[in-house]
Image (cartoon, rainbow, N blue to C red; front, side):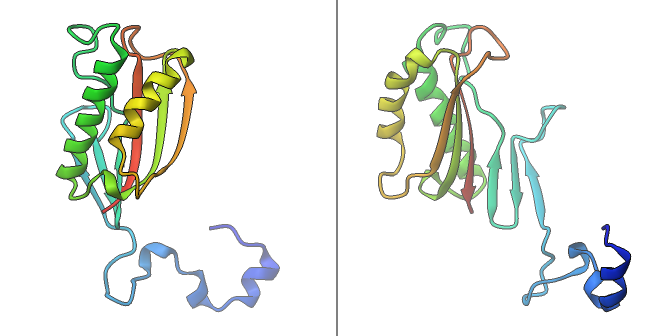
Length: 150
């Protein structure tokens, strides 16, 4: 932590403690992190930090097979994966806070939105962003990453 000399000289030593040393009123550390779905050497599939659940970017399971070139199948199967991962983390799409969506082609926006609207909980819609982006594989048409409350 960087503080100017004039500021640090006026602060009591107890105010200079890092948040890692501070506990909440329940004596639980403020930074509780759990990592699930860690078989991928590059990342965790799920990270739970305190009461927030972060999912890594999710893509269709069979994007180069039966789902190749089919946006509806790719979106539906990806959102099913999101449902399963949220359940594994002890939450659901009703607790979504935020969603980030990547489309290979923005001309698919309307079709994707129709599926999205039928999938989300209409009483608990998350904030959302959607952009067009090149994908890790040319066969991937849709990717989503979400944050939910536990």
